[in-house]
Length: 422
Image 1: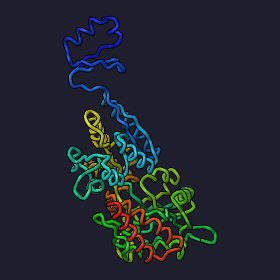
Image 2: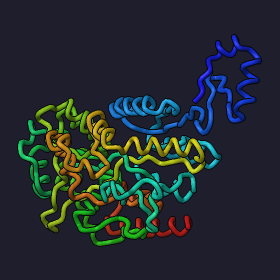
Image 3: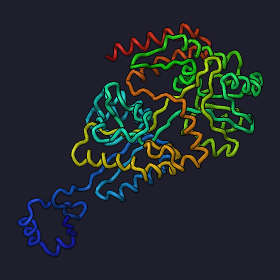
Image 4: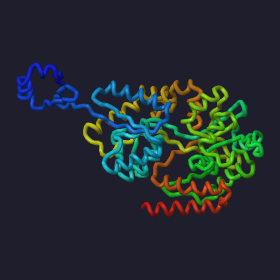
């Protein structure tokens, strides 16, 4: 590469200008940078990087991205932060018009709609899928075997959190959880032993799994089933029969009550670990979701992770730079750095038994809590399923709908919306 400072150009004047261009027909002035590039060396590339991470993860992510820029001085990263749903809507709207972030770090369920809309591109031809954990890769692989995202971390799953100051022994079954929570509940005084996001389907389907069922199988909704009726009946009883959960409790309600030490147990995801640990310290226990003794099956969280998606518009130098960023993020040293900086589990199989995990009781517990998980389907139909479950779950939890009727309506709504979509 030829490097010529602007000052030198001024001193040498037009003679230097003519000499350079007569001797080399592929020399270009990079006025803004004050350099000349020769041969196939590209001018600096700027990649826009869109994400929705929590504050603690953003700080670690910044360090990693700065490391990438230092290792690749010809590539600059411009990061933009969004709330989860804003990231999805902003990207798909902008990308449909030919814009949007060049690369997007997001959960797997973005892959379904993004792939159908042709706003992201497949990565399977170069991403070497065999190096990633099977569950993580499955969450961005469509029914035809096409891989749509590069796994950067794994997890994003729900688990049981227990305040050992209030409840010394972690319940191993749902039945035991109900009993223990009941011993710490007094609805008349507004006291409860258990709190979680009651009306959110992502939480609810973990109970459905304890009846041996999944809400979507091979892109077909499975909602009008006996297992769905039983699961709806179970969570309805939490509120109206055993009265172990606060009424109308959402995410903020459950988190606040647990952090303030007012409930002994909650269900939340790996993203909440740092906040809960800061609040409870050694009194915090992290465990897998319990087994339902009546069926012998475990509650099963949806497992995915965070993935790097590449804008469909990328080509040439920008595409190669995006691939380089992806490879950097999944390299073993950077994956180890991400474990330390973000507290998230790695996506690559090479670190499955890393001492960074086995020697860290919190990371080990998060990893163990994933053992009974099910891969989150990336099918676009999964969003339809969420939308079909939510209003009927709310109706059951407000005592306005019978579980059997609610399950039937869910199935009909999902099938109708999928038919319209197709």
